[in-house]
Length: 179
Ligand code: IMP
Ligand code: MG
Image (tube, rainbow, N blue to C red; front, side):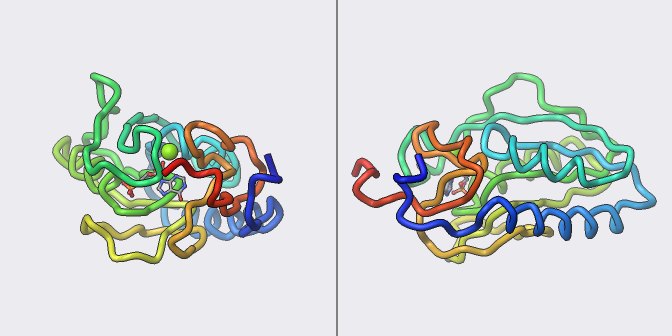
């Protein structure tokens, strides 16, 4: 799997060291409020597991599953909620966790949908943010790392559902991407 990478951007040690900092920041910000985390599956699974174990606060966890990619490397623009029941967010302080902020369409759709259910607050935390002009108006409140335009895999991020279990984050070799 590692051989399929053009280069490694963040190794496991670097990722976990950054999670220590993010977790400290989130713990300080939510010291006085009960936090409800909503993790966007499947991409945020590994990030969520490592981040939440670093936050020593009482919190609730819910998951949400959406599809927007349909296997390619470009978003289709349409965001489909894969479950009928959305998590109960009314009256709660919500922190949405996702793997990557790319076009922003996914997180924007999720945020707007959850806002309709009247939470007390909503913030967004992403492991990666791509430095591009975003199609949707959304900013993340907590960002692990900023990256360029390349397509990355590993540490939860996939290409056609593969590479999620790579412990590092790297750029996928271009010849492996089906045009
Ligand atoms: P957005 O709606 O364009 O912001 O894309 C959101 C989703 O697309 C993410 O949650 C990822 O699942 C996927 N995605 C975007 N960029 C990448 C990438 O570089 N590698 C792997 N998945 C990506
Ligand atoms: Mg994906």
